[in-house]
Every structure is written in structure tokens, then in C-alpha cells.
Image 1 (cartoon, rainbow, N blue to C red):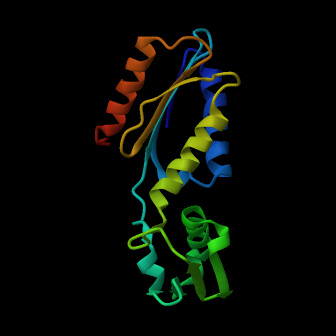
Image 2 (tube, one colour; image 1 turned 45 degrees about the vertical axis):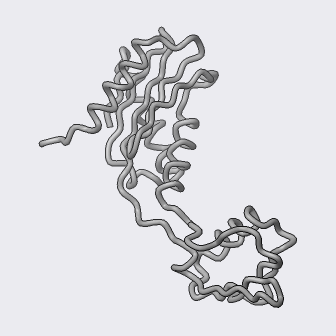
Length: 188
């Protein structure tokens, strides 16, 4: 982690804040590198975070088998692994609505009059979950009132330039430089 600031004490404080937020959200190990630039005189806050690779997404077929009953117009899902059952229910409610979903047992979910395609349905995506947590961390770290945000994220790097004024092109360029720095493999 590299925190740039004209004031060394300010950089130390920001590093402490960042470490605390990452610890609170339990994502410190999921971040391989980070660059932060802070200048309250301008005012600007730039952050670029490189996240580690995550496990593959969990699809419906990974945790259940299902079959459609044409006569009853229902799809019955038989759960093999209930680890992601809450995620499955949330996805089904989102797709079909709560009223069409019933759960007669821990290992069975029924969709009444299904309309959505569930083949290959992603139930849980660790990469998306990590990105959500990193964005949450960034918004906790941002200085109060910095509501003008430019998101420059790409692939495994989440990067933002933030201010409470108009964004300057030089700040956006600085953010792009930080992204390129994170892309460059380090040799120590």
C-alpha cells in the first residue's frame, strides 16, 4: 500500500484508516496492492485497488438438480448442498417473485408457473461480492463531502477519483497512472 500526501502525518492517518476499514470488512487478504493520493488543499482523493483472483461463480447446477413438471406447471429444485440456499432463494425471488416460490423442506424449492430460464443461473459470484465490499470500503474511506466521483475501474483494479468540486483532468490522469502502476508486475 502506498499513500501519497504532501503531509507525512496525514498519510500515516489515512493508512491507519484504510487498514482499519479493510479489517472491519475482512477484505485485507483479498487486496494485492493499493495506491492512494490525497491532497486536501486541492481537494482530491484518488484510490486504486488491485484485488486478488477469486473462486469461480456458483451456478444452480453446482448445488441442485431440477425438473419441470408440465402437468403441474412447476419446477422442482432438489438441493444437494444447502450452503448457498439463501442466495438461491434471493435469486428466485428476484426472477419470479416471492409469491411463486415455495419451500416445503430444507432440500426442496418449488417454482409455481415458472417464466424465467434457470439453466446456468449464477447463484453466488465471489468476484462480484468482493467488488461490492471493496466499493463499500472506498466509500467508508472517502473524505466527508467528496460526492463528485469518477470511476475508472477495469478488470481486477477498482479505481476512483473523488472531490467535492469539479474534477480536473490532471486528477483523472493521475488515477490512470496509478492503475498502470498496479498493472506492472513488481520485482523485489
